Length: 381
Image (cartoon, rainbow, N blue to C red; front, side, top):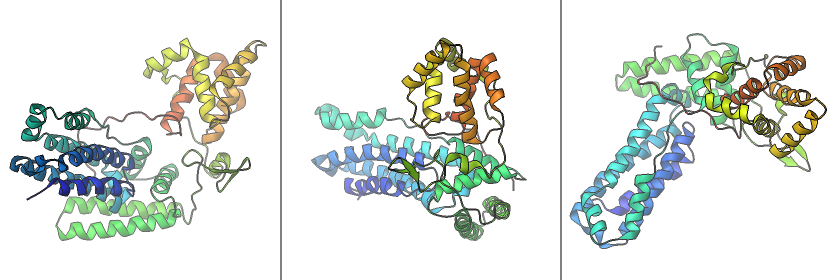
């Protein structure tokens, strides 16, 4: 017979396993935080005679099954191939949502709920309400979506290889790129053997395709060591100098020049953002300058500088320098003259484009867009 202690052990194991997840880290962390709310409820139940009620014990047994599914899902993000988990990423997102909904459904044990309300057990009522009000947003981040698109392509370019390189570096920050690829190939081969033993031919074709992707990317970028980018991971600052990482410009200098991902006239796609920028362009510029400088320039200082330059008619001369700094950050093609004319002719459109560019590239301090998953997903080798 299940007890609250059995379910408690699972709620403790889920956060522990989530800390070591290689894929879907954010989703695993959110599920772990939800499991901690369930843990708080179970700890309160375990300290009362309610845990001995047969009907509640049966409910705990069903809850234990849902928590076990959650633990298996989180452990799959730690043990399985990251390439596979992201190639079929939306399926995993649906699974995270389903598992949380199943946990919430099993938490509502009728006998427990009725006793809590009948005897006015406020501490248990608050714990139940906290679980009910906790709704998590499971999705794929921008880098996951880019990596998925790169893997699903029949032919990959050098830019796709760079996306996969960045994705694998995030999953294996302590390994060189070729070492991370070797680790992925070993996991894929192990999963291929397991799928073949179960005669899952569709799974086998997917995994064989990913093995080919890993091989092709390895040939495209032989023995390339990934530099730690300031946009991904903070540097160690000692006596005012940045150590243990390359500068952002050096990190991108070996790659070909990139294009803007956000369109200059794409402001119509973001009416709210465009409206706020038109009403208060200095505020938007302050946010961009603060993000691009990684906090070296505060929003207030950037706004004050804009006002100071505007007194002598040189407002665009100052704002275009921030645009140039953003281009250098991501190695986007262009020139200082283009930056100046863009800010002179279409200042608000330029500001909207720059902020969208920071969001699309997942730059630190810029919250990415919420991704709407497709209704279904399949993959052809």
